[in-house]
Length: 129
Image 1 (tube, one colour):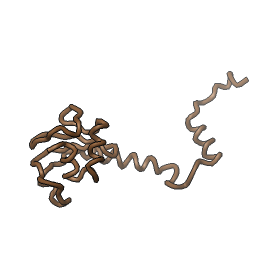
Image 2: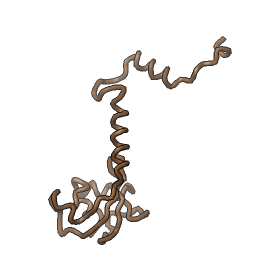
Image 3: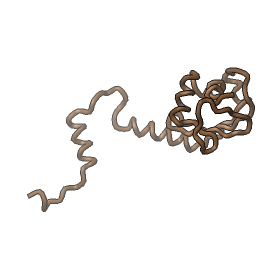
Image 4: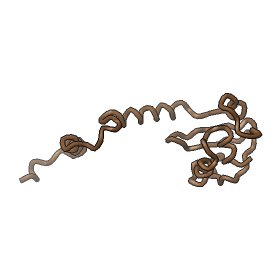
């Protein structure tokens, strides 16, 4: 089975065209090799799929005959993604929400000055004259 069709069948991508695009962008690997969408996959191979800033590691147990239901996905693949990858995603999400909430809009002048003060290095008093 083609790798793009396989990823669609085991519900890693919502559409087959999204799976094909991910393969073309180099986000799908078998071993350490970037694969084309037409690459055949076989049982006992290891896939790495980069999606949502996580490198999912998938072990192929069997090839499904067609797209399977969400409850039956575990028959065909085993997810070997380390838990640290999901923890990093959570930390990234919290770090983005720390300063400003989503949908608040552009920074105000005061916010902009605070950001500039945060990133500026301390000025040398001798060079200010």
